[in-house]
Length: 268
Image (cartoon, rainbow, N blue to C red; front, side, top):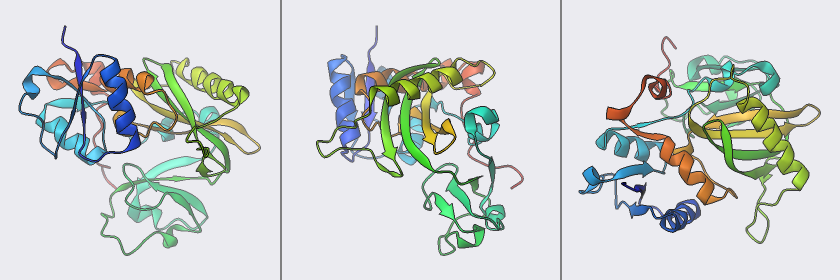
């Protein structure tokens, strides 16, 4: 039986180092690529990627891998009781016309700061960004605490706090502390969403949940497992989600193909 090989980008960051160690402990192969080209022996590997979206996309294309993830409008389609605020996806051009204070973020990257803008006119104008790029516009809310959950087959494999009142939830000793009540609340809310089969979800992804001041638990957003920071999550719990999110295109089922994202916004 072929063991997976974790492929990592050239840049060393704490997350990739932690995943490297967990993969070695699990008996996986690990290769840190020197650039944007897959290893010469890649035909013998079961490759599993972890890295930024641009790098992962290039390597996946070269290896004929499909990367599974939530679509750009996943949060918009989520039932309102899980979202607890108004959210819609539109183009950058349309977002510039928003007249009320709104939380605005790129739907697919970090090309401009995700934050509350007084209006769409306050969005950066000096960046060379396509006006048709998709952005998410949402009602501003105040998040008391936010948790990251890695999900495999609708089960949380590991979770960690990552923000408190908008600041990193990391302690001076490099831990990511949370009370048992907070952790139980995050897990219970995530489990309630994942147990609702009317909510469509990829086989593996990252689900961020948090507490909205005065409202309670809600979904922050969803992201690809293979490009998301792990914060205080157990790296051993992250690996299975990464593996499931990387599928050879020759073995791509119709069900999995529904989670291969087309990064364009038609008719924007």
